Image (cartoon, rainbow, N blue to C red):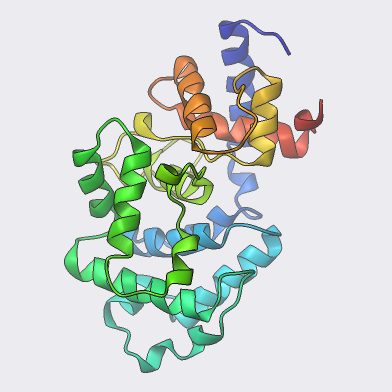
Length: 261
């Protein structure tokens, strides 16, 4: 599909407005943090839900709700105060390759972070202060912080590392939820110390194929190099809020079959 920059911007703006709507929240993983109003609750359960966000959406939502229930519907209070005894139900949690061992460590690491920092946002802000022009290094910094305490080796695979050329789709999606804010009330925009301009798109099979059909992405692999290529091209269209077009690319691929054309 050959379009000029202005035509492409106009087309994607139209599709962004079409798909960035509250009606789509109910069946999306972002519906789980939308159950809460407190910042810390949203970022904790948002991070856990994003971590689980691969596979069938109904299963993702069911598993995330299970975590919410086991945290007594109060994620922040639970993270701050849970004891070893409170972790017993989580030992049996399974979602695809994410099991009870992984779940228990994630909770322990989050507890350590919330005792050493104000919140999750502060960890990412600290990374941006060190690497203001590289979200890949910021995510790598967060990953190192998350695994800075004793942990099972197997659990490392559940937080992607862009410096190993992973697309880090789920972390990029989580950051989109927390950082960008719009009038439609989908993304939260509760991390006000981080600019949406520095975000990278959460690249998956649907958005990647659509982006290639639109000439926004040449690289064939869906890796971090492709994420940066797509992000740079989206910044040409909107340098202040490039990842808003994730709604358009995903919607075109999933709902309109544009990734097959």
